[in-house]
Image 1 (cartoon, one colour):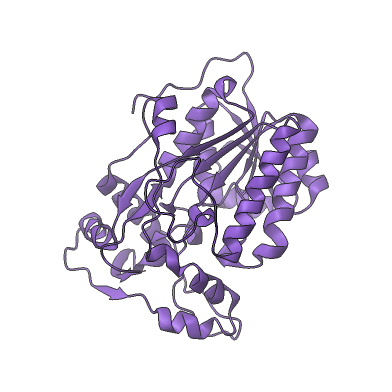
Image 2 (cartoon, rainbow, N blue to C red):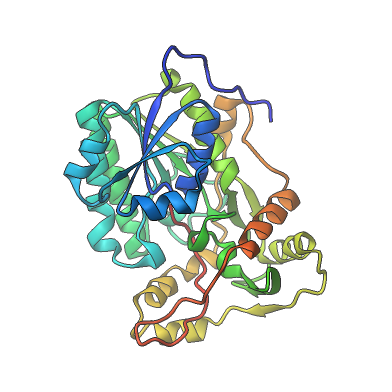
Length: 350
């Protein structure tokens, strides 16, 4: 990569990160630190968050809740940037949490004059939207979560009209380290530190956009290095790797070093059945269309602005991601009645 590093400044830029231990949040923190930012992070449990990130990460942890507007506003004091990387885990309770959380971040950005960075997804687009969508593509969501995402972006745009500077970075399915928010966590079965099997989530020939989280974090940091050139409301599409399930499975086998790693169809009928009593399974079923339709993103605007899109070679990215994933403890999610649920394929989560 030949992207410029952080510009020299008299005083380090300061960022408040909501969701700093999550998928997008943790990798954006790492990229911002590399680009010279000071990081403050809001969390309900600072000690647990500190243990999770480790002592090497110079993060100032603040106790608070992203749903509590007063907590977010107080934590944002002195911040130049607010990273809104919070999302309900396992698809739970979107209706009651997503919009109140973004409203709290908007209020904080408005109160302290900070820029607001928000990751976005392809949920906003209809199943037949097509491939290579640019930033002006019409947003006609077909799901409840997609409609919430569209409303979320509408509120961000309205805030920008009031003077809040907003940067939206849209990507496809995350992969990389980051726990249950990473797609690989659900695509790869593993035991004793190694992959043991893979899931085929959809038709083998339907392309899908995948975003390697370190590259996405670097993209956000590189855009912020040129913040003075950004408009009040900017949206950039990150293309990432566009792969069919067949191509992804082949790449995962290469990365694992096991060309015979077995692959099984994802148990969608079981997911549908469990959705009768389990919210996560019900919401997952609604998003199945993303594995059946070629919804991908065009990055022409991003490349024109930065000169290139940060990109780690796919085999390297998957090898690094699998290594971190298999080194971490994992347990199958459980339904409310205590029975083991099938793995969830995370389409997008902050």
